[in-house]
Picture 1 (cartoon, one colour):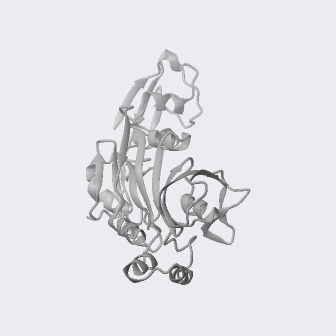
Picture 2 (cartoon, helix red, strand yellow):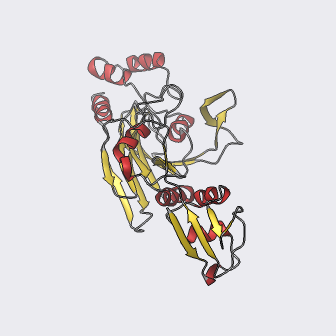
Picture 3 (cartoon, one colour):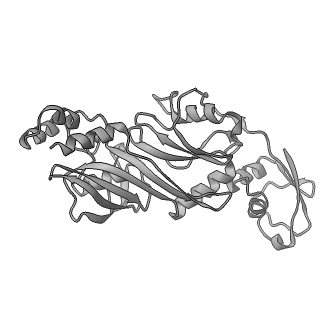
Length: 323
């Protein structure tokens, strides 16, 4: 696709990449910089190879935007629970057990594979590649609402909201014990464990991270249902922060109570039968993204989506109520 533009008076002596980003909001600034570097931007008929080049009013710019390349992951017909979709984005309810991105050990059967099939030709390309733009991630065993961009414009706008924290994300989790106070804020920086890159922990040199929590329901002193709102979005943030205040997410294999200790804890509390089996055998971290609020990058309208807890967590709460 070729586009011809004339530099307006308002952009005189401005950077080339910044000017084009304003004139062509459907392309992200990083994508424009890629086009400049690859020689796909001509300024008065001459290739402009520097994004920092200053432009003058009246100059003519020609952009050649190549068709998006095919994404490397293969499209797969995997069922998706789509909550909302339009030309720019979609909101889906991710089930537990679904990996988001293809990676070592998960080359296929991921959310990205499913989205490539579902979106098909409706993807306009993210960074020049025909792929969905994952705005934020959920761990494999965390369920709930996720936001996906279908174009450069939408991806840039939504990513900016995530960065400036105007996007609101709310989760519910079943945790061991009852946090005190019942409403609080965990402000603790997070970093990867230097000896295990898959393990996050609170470290003074880590990136700042804050989680606001509220106890929604409690089951004696055994466990409680808490609602968590993220101020930041670090890897495993809720799981690490709740473990940090001694109320780990139930079923969390990485930061929670070891399975061997769970059995003893339940027996000491006198829990038996179906309730014992339901709690002890819960197969994942009991964490679900229940609400998502953001400003639509095209219309500017604020959109809010909510979802119920999945059946496995509802069954877990039912078992806890019996205790």
